Image 1 (cartoon, rainbow, N blue to C red):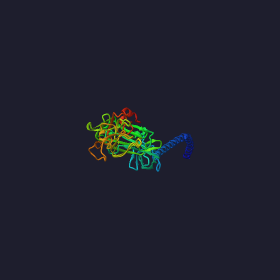
Image 2: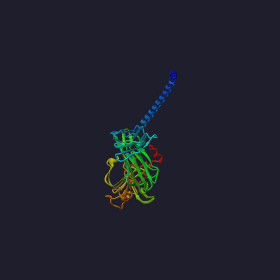
Image 3: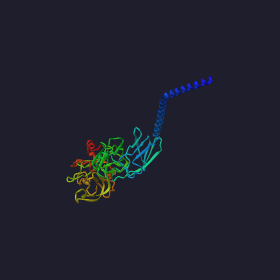
Image 4: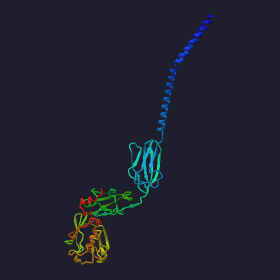
Amino acid sequence: MGVSHISNRSEKQSERWSRRGVLTVLGVVPAAVLTGCSGSAGAAESSSSGGSSATASVKAAKAPTVTVLPADGTKKADFTTPVTVSVTDGTLAAVKVTGNDGSTLAGTFNDAKTKWTSAKNPYSGTKYTVAAQAQGAAAKTVTFTTKSPGETFVGYFTPEANSTSGVGMPVSINFTHAVKDRSTVQKAITVTAEPAVEVVGHWFSDTRLDFRPETYWAAGTKITLSLRLKDIEGQDGVYGVQSKDVTFDIGREQISTVDLSSKEMVVKRDGTTLATYPVSGGNAQHTTWSGIMVISERFKQTRMESSTVGLGDEYDISDVPHAQRLTTSGTFVHGNYWASTSVFGSENTSHGCVGLHDAKGANNTSVAGYKFYDSSMLGDVVIVKNSGEKTVAADNGLNGWNLSWADWKAGSAI
């Protein structure tokens, strides 16, 4: 019985303590809940942090996008702007642009290596393939074709490629279309010499540009003309088409001086007198130009007709021997078989040319006309003095040597 009594009290006490325990437990529930909430917030943060990392990973894993301009498949792309390659979500590793002629376009990356730009514009009328690769990605290949220019021009040059000329030969370029932007066109043309010497261009008109050094070329000089006119805009909508190098050589030095007071011509080869010939120059009504002239054309025989030089029907000779042109306007040094031998060295009787005794048929090797022609070449210098006429215009033939160096350089556009 006692045991039961004690048990009952214990049960009641236990009940009491249980209720207190419950109350005590209930009392700390908020703290536990708060702790639980705190724990839940931490878990949420952890989950959120894990989500940010996942998003960043997704972004990091996003594939680079490469864009090429002109776009793939373009048929008439502009050739006046550079080729560009750009990338988003990455960096560029390599870019190669190749034309269907085997040429390539070089270029440079920006500092971030997110953009590549060609150093020069693509050529007109050319198909290009662009191979661009972003870091860690496969290469992208794009093809496009540039349009052809609507209107074009070329420059016809003197002397001919691989020829040998005298020391007075300038490099003369005549354009098929008037040039408005002289500076741009001149920058696209260079003339260099070996041994080196300063060579400057001079515009005589909007269709003619000549190059020369300050004094005659040195004998044995090698000259290179570089034409980079392709896609150079000479004037609005008119583009050049040439891209080539031309070389020619300078031979020995031959300078002939014609004194029409003494009526003789002294020929010097490399500074040494080679020959002296009696001559006949222009008469008082048709004086010969004075000044420095350069042989620009040579004919074993040619027809000379007075009507072509504004002298009516005064003469028409079908077989003038050993004719060498000195001016565009019609001055020649040539053989003469129709005048008396006594004329040469004693009278000036021509219509402005310089004549030497010669024989009909141009085959007699013993006469002065033949000998001088045989010793000459294109580009040789012929100086005329004491003719009673003013100095020939610098653009009348290849005669720019009549301009001072200062005046010559003043005609440059760069």
